[in-house]
Amino acid sequence: MDQSQRFPSASPEPAEYDAIVVGGSYAGLSAAMQLARARRRILILDGGRPRNRFAPTSHGFFGQDGLSPGKMIETARRQVMAYPTVRFQQAEATLATREKDGFLLAFGGDHAARGKRLVLATGVKDDLPTIPGLQELWGTGVAHCPYCHGYEVADRKLAVLGVNGPAVHQALLLRDWSGDVTLLTNGGEDLTKDDQDRLRDRGVKIEKASVSRLIAKGQELEAVEFADGRRLPFGGMFLPSRWSLTSPLAEQLGCEIEQGAFGPMIKTDAFKKSTVEGIYAAGDAARAMHSATLASADGVIAGAAAHQSLVFAGGQRS
Image 1 (tube, rainbow, N blue to C red):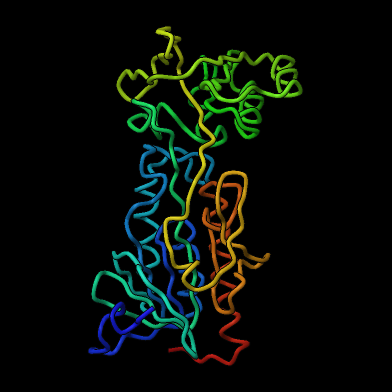
Image 2 (image 1 turned 45 degrees about the vertical axis):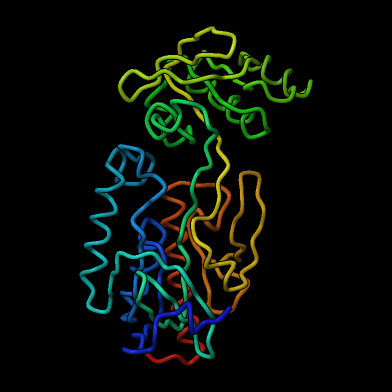
């Protein structure tokens, strides 16, 4: 890569920080809070497209149950920004390279910054099947997590879309929320006999026809229409979707990427340290099980670990 053509010119000289946090949602802001309270100079970069922006409410977060995700982030950002060593920039980080004493990042088209440590809290995006009506209902009538959204549709007729192991797993779980659950295999490969037996024993119905579209009533799912012309009414759908990483930075910097059941993840240890020295990763981009609570916890660990690495590496505050 010709860095002179890709990075902004060095005039003015890029600002230097103890740490740069890429991602300003649950994980990123939680990491930033630890570093800010340790009086380290930090930059938060956020592209402004959190994964849960489609959901009107967030559930299961201690002390914040039922609040708007946007409101939660707004409050957290305001609290982090109250610390004088924090700078926030609404911008996408597009390019990163390793230097002798840290990392150089390009962001916002013509800006650059240097950081001694890097926390990647860049999240993932859901790769949804191209079924008419699904995208419009994502986060409202169609959800990905029964622990986040199952209570609100309890006792309704529920559907799970998919034919893979996670879809079977989710259909089995959802019987605790509803007595009427149907697994929609969408014309996919046949289920194994073992899976069919488990679903039958749990009282889950199986519908094999291909789905042609979802029918909405406001922001809620009303029915599923199949390729054979039939319509079945449902009051909610769950989709254990595959995901992809939203940012190229981890790969640009040589971090090892693991392939999980749903998609790629940045490999980290128990302290959220990646396979590249000085880089930490937190939140959905670095774990298999996703929730706002877990992302925030990851951020706390990553922020504290990044700070301690600065201290014990002899790094003075910038």
